[in-house]
Length: 225
Ligand code: ADE
Image 1 (cartoon, rainbow, N blue to C red):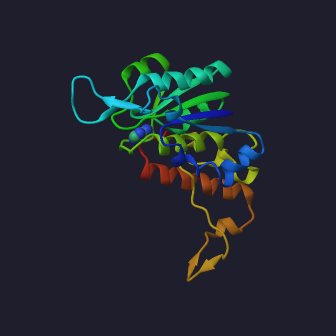
Image 2: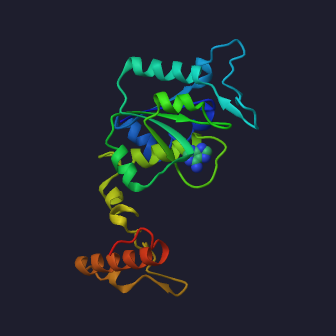
Image 3: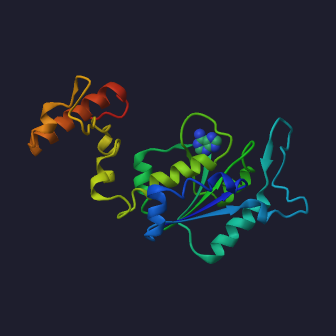
């Protein structure tokens, strides 16, 4: 999978892709992430990226021309399956959407800022608008990093078997069950006996019960009998 992120604050994305699982995925050639500085596509001498909103009101709006130039330059090189715009008024991201998008080959992610982008960008170039939750961030960069992380870890081969994405919370509409590691007892707090029993079927059954209980209590909205 190739992800091209378009932003006016590229430095904000220096770090998230240079560690741990996301770095390893790139080292193994399973994911490629490119961050594009929108300012390089600015048209005037001031390198302006935003302007006042027509009709007045507070906040600046990102202009269409630099974004068009950047997206067009990328599309001239290869085909893209999706051009995603990160915005708080988009569809809310969930594991189902992540599963679906992780199968795409090439995606562009556009990060918004200020009051967002000129509506014509959305109308002309964007295939999907995604929010990471009902709160407003100061820009789409952190949201783009969240989305990219959630997609890259689903690419086959990125996670080892032990950390397989199949046992994550939200797969099968269940939250993940509690987990424990050594020591078996700490300050009188014991690991449930069943996990020390070595009985694989019983452990599986216990984990399922715990996942069901946790989901009913914490997320009745996603629980399906
Ligand atoms: N940009 C600002 N807030 C956002 C959010 N909640 N999700 C996606 N992009 C955003």
